[in-house]
Length: 339
Image 1 (cartoon, one colour):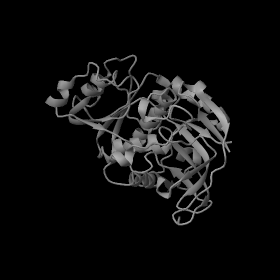
Image 2: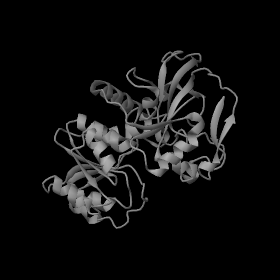
Image 3: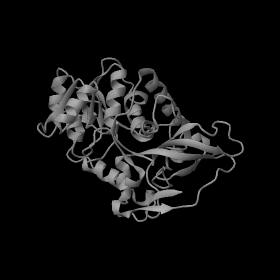
Image 4: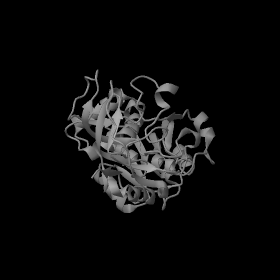
């Protein structure tokens, strides 16, 4: 079988197409032929060793997110059978309830081999059935970005009709958050430096958009769009350079759903007294459990929500897919469709 392996964590140049022995499903295991995968920003960090001691630095098969078709199952497996379409979980051992060190420490594509491989062995609880209404590429976009947005908006965010959500940018997590918030009856403000992407976000239902490059004080602008009250929940993806404006935008008693560190991981010059004096909740969002994934898939089917796929690259052009994501030109998810 073919696999794309990170031979050394030196960036995209460390990726190499490699031939590996075909795996077999042992007792209690499921063998899957991978059909699609998707790239998240964290995967780009992993290519450069950004997770330090938490990741493999040599001979790692990248990517946490993938979908495919069951080839066969080992003895004792009755949850799946050959021919079933399945999607892998981001946190493979987090089944339900609150996470702990055992259920969220291991991640595909970071400390254990991921999805850029033609055949992969899973345990049954690490997979969910792919709904018929989703393609393999669409399903592959869900485990990290989709479920993270679901947690921020629904499972942890408890969005109610009339709530105002601000989400940053037009990548995968942000657009999923937009779609989920609208289905929950919320109003959504989207920030982007691209007027074209802002228009496309409006086409997906965004109520307002702000060009953060033209308006560096966008936090106050967002607050003004709410009549001065402030937004209920900020999907905080930027990190150091956006946190101050997010704190200005959010209402007293509101939530910052802390997800990304695209501009850095420090608090910078954030207005931390705002957190205390205005009872703001800074909620860390760590993807979600298998039960959350199943809840999300049911909601997506009821509301006919399809992921926004920016571009799907062939398996042989995986390095180009990484470069495209890092360029920031994408709108929605960047995926890989296996040849």
